[in-house]
Image (spheres, rainbow, N blue to C red):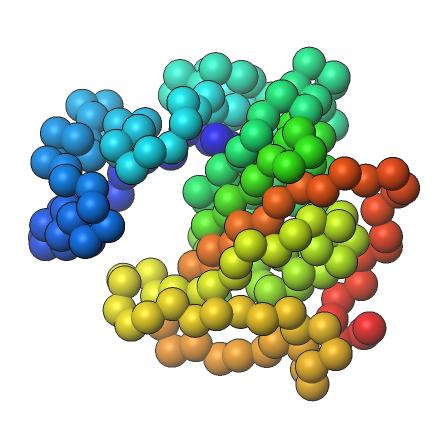
Length: 207
């Protein structure tokens, strides 16, 4: 996990909605199964069936197991160590975001999965970047050779159904879209064996 993620459920009614949603998925949970005293998310992820997670952060202030600045290349100690890397809102805060993605690729074993949920449209000033569809489709898929398992945007406040984001390549103006409310982009990609250098990254507008 990139950064140690917290549970942000301040608005009234969000906790019952989450418990109800989990129930529809066959997961019977109480607030104690979701929240932990320090506010972080490991209890929740364990409840929904995720494997044990370690965290990587640029300091140990929040209890991360690994300390590394994602602006810098990794050494070999974490190469191919993980079958899943979760980015719940970290990479957009890394100035050298391309290096952070190269680090994710290095940490994943073949067949490993990268899950990213970061700010997209409507997050001005939140991080260095707001992520659009060319990152998952043109970087992870077209350049790095990953398989796309799914890509969506969804409303920050949870209103409405997620919007499926298709490959913008060869579409007029890529996948430009104007949203009315702040959005997350959520995508899941899977690393494939690679016997050659990644292809140059070209935005869909210019392919």
